[in-house]
Image (cartoon, rainbow, N blue to C red; front, side):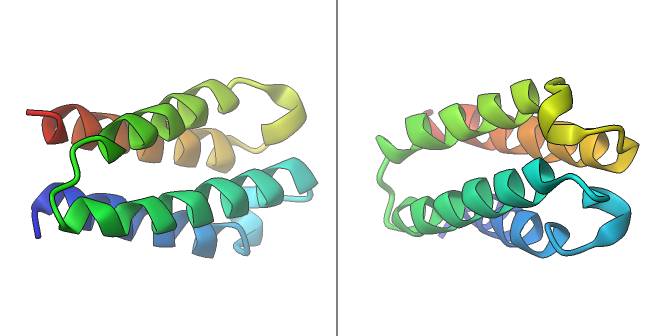
Length: 103
């Protein structure tokens, strides 16, 4: 078990939990759906990271890039600054984790 696997696991749980925090998601259904789908997919993917599967880091990298891109799609984030911040922070941290995991 590495810190990278734990980081992805914790951040995926955070995405799922933050989907239900009104101060972050606001009234945008796109935020709720995006947080839940990406959070659940990253949660499922994080478990093979504990076994040392390096190929899974590419999948986490794709999810990270999607989180960063979706932060700037107004149809998803709406006008919530909390959602933008959440997308960027989680996306950048998981991006760094997936890049270091490939080493």
